[in-house]
Amino acid sequence: MPTLLQKHEGYLTGHCLVAMPGMGDPRFEGTVIYLCAHTAEGAMGIVINRELEEISFPDIVGQLGIQPTPFCDDVRVQFGGPVETGRGFVLHTSDYQNEGTLSVDDSMALTATLDVLRAIASGDGPMRVIMALGYAGWGAGQLDGELKGNVWLTVPADRQLVFETAVKDKYTTAMGRLGIDPRLLSENAGHA
Picture (spheres, one colour):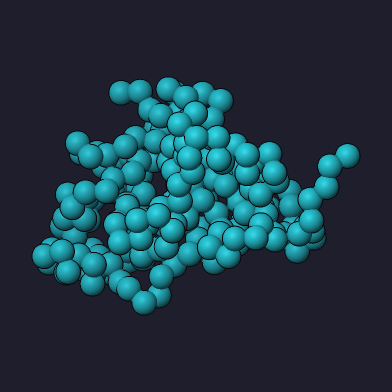
C-alpha cells in the first residue's frame, strides 16, 4: 500500500515542525508537530509535546462506553492542535492498521476511530501511541508560507523522538538534532 510520503515527494509528511522562538502564536510556542500529511492542498499534524494534565485516557474511553483496563493507564492525552479539539486522534506505530488508519510512512500511522481505542483498551492496540485531542491544520500553501517566513524549523521524525522521548524534552531534543541550542536563538528573523 503506498504511503502519503511516497505519493507526495518533496513535501514534509513524516517530518516534525519545530516552532521558532517568538513565532507570535501562543497555541504553538515551543511545540513540536508531527506532520501526518503535507500536500499542495494543505497540511495536517499532531502536536506531540503538550500533555493535557486535566484529562486521562481511562476517562476518555470510559465516556465512550469502553471499559478502561490496565492497558489504558500508560496512555497520556495531549493537545494535538487547535482544530477539532473535541475529536480524538491516535498517532501510533504502524503495527496496528484498520479501515480508518492513515499510513503516514512505514513506521507511523494515524487512526481516529473508536476501533483503535477499543484495541488499546483490550491490549491489542499499537505498540506505541499518542492520544491527541485536536490537530493542527493548514490550508493550501499556508504552511509553505510559514516555512518561508522562518516560523518553523523541520527535522526528520522517528520513533525515538515521537514516542520515546519524554514530552518535556521533545522540543530541546528536536532542536538538538539540528545542532541548535534554543536558548541561543533570537526571536527576530532577518534576511540578507
